[in-house]
Image (cartoon, rainbow over all chains, first blue to last red; front, side, top):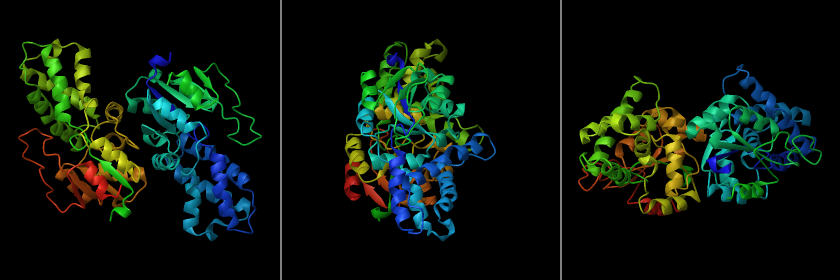
Amino acid sequence: MSQSVQALLFDVFGTVVDWREGVARDAAAFLQRHPGARQDAYAFADVWRGRYSPSMEVVRAGRRPFTRLDQLHRENLEATLPAFGIDPASVPEDQLQWLNRAWHRLDPWPDSVAGLTRLKARYIVATLSNGNTSLLLNMAKYAGLPWDAILGAEAAQAYKPTPQAYLRTAELLDLPPERICLVAAHNGDLAAARQCGLKAAFVARPREFGPEQQTDLVAEQDWDWVAGNLIELAAQFQA
Amino acid sequence: MSQSVQALLFDVFGTVVDWREGVARDAAAFLQRHPGARQDAYAFADVWRGRYSPSMEVVRAGRRPFTRLDQLHRENLEATLPAFGIDPASVPEDQLQWLNRAWHRLDPWPDSVAGLTRLKARYIVATLSNGNTSLLLNMAKYAGLPWDAILGAEAAQAYKPTPQAYLRTAELLDLPPERICLVAAHNGDLAAARQCGLKAAFVARPREFGPEQQTDLVAEQDWDWVAGNLIELAAQFQA
């Protein structure tokens, strides 16, 4: 079956990079500059990330024009700060910008670069992420992710799991959906991709949301491929 | 000055790859399958390419919605065949598709991969081409071009030298135009980029149009950088 796939498209946050550790690392440095603030960097990462899906939902529902993720992250950051005892208006602009770009400075999971490098030798490997182009590009330079192309929500002008996010990406690649495989650690993303005719590969990332993670621990459908990490996936794809 | 530049964006046809040799090579193979046809593969490449700018001009002038280059190439191919004694309706569809994708199979100039690889270590290197995304992506896989991102007309939905082609690309990169340098072998492309506030680097490709080339032999303005090839350019950028 892998013979017919020409492009592997990757969800990025959680699937390729560890957003929680990366955001918590930079949040810790930020919080230390605000001694009166609640010093819980993991909680900060979780609360900030908790606003991610609701903020995209406004766009997905058509109540707001397409807005890049950097902007949503910024609004969500300002909404997060008060719960940690910080008035956003009191924070210098360059500190806010620096913290907001924590999402550009995320480390890959230990297997990501090696797995992608192997897959790249035989397939197109590209992003299909809700992150905006510059975020994903800066992250790739930071983390050494060897993408052939940066695709996803901004190029498609639609956030996953809206069908247009998958279908417009297939159109940009000029490939029928069945020649494309989405790789993701999230069953919901894969289900939406399969609805659009893409193949689906589940990669387990059971600590994406920290040690207490309850969701997406296992494949919840008979996905076309299921792997424990991207090196295992490369082996399944004979790459 | 190079300190302030973060991204080098490249014109591709002629600047990075030798379209004339590549198209003539595949045209020769195609023409040999049509023994009654005029067997002049370089003339075929030149006539086909001659229709390139006029076909984009219809889009640039707003008389046609944005149409990807693969489609314009296909229409231009069908318009070119009769002058070589071939009725396009008599050619099997797979042969037409194969020949049209000659533009996906172009070889780099001898210095391109080495120069881009050096520049990539210090800068974002991406396309800013009128080629569509899948064309540029397939070419990169074929030719080993190490792009960080595939940008240009299709992502911007505007053909160079329309200002939107440069400005929307800057927006996708989330960089002010002056932090971006366009690298091109064509003075006109560089002039349009400079009008938009980008930096400009001229790379001489005096045989792009064959041994009789009359245009773009030298830098016609005081471009920010002028180089004989991409390895020289990398040295000028301390990369």
